[in-house]
Image 1: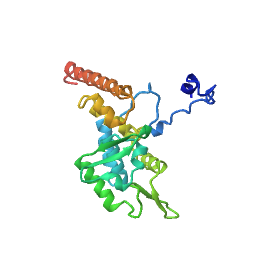
Image 2 (image 1 turned 120 degrees about the vertical axis):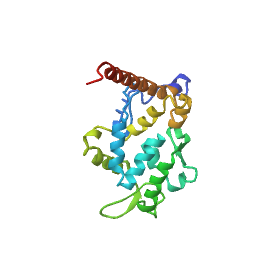
Image 3 (image 1 turned 180 degrees about the vertical axis):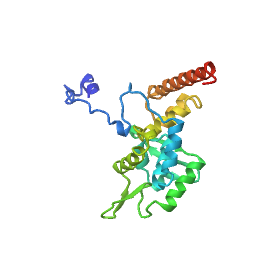
Image 4 (image 1 turned 45 degrees about the vertical axis):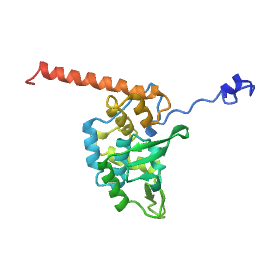
Length: 223
């Protein structure tokens, strides 16, 4: 709108007085200066151990953590969007931009278990849910996923406060330094490289923490 005013297409911006909606942190929305939260190896180990018997949630967790896709992108997938042979799927990200997400053989095994044993067959959506009263089968909603997630994270102290979107942050922080920053930007679907560069700061923080832990061990070897 401001651009249209500058170019003379309109005389004023009709939405200039509107306030921005606050970001919904549970859905992974954030301001650019918000700290990045990611799961520690201990938290990841605990999470995988507690979701392994829930085939649907287990598949969701594996795909979010190992591909870095957004929650909305994953829930919007149809079964036909998956290339099972090549272990990848195409998502429609922000700005209506398509990108490929890739997963490993261990994720493929978890996904196969869900597809064969837990997914409702007469629905096009990849992740399905059945209403407890009407028994109607539909695409799994964010609300349903969030409720499942809360049931898990609220039960275990190690996972208190962990958001499901933090799995995407974890994916990125694990890969900074292993692949180029431009390649990571493409895999994450970031429009701006500045968004991706935020993860380098997280890696620097992790390096400092590791260095200080090592110093403590070296200075106090018997403690």
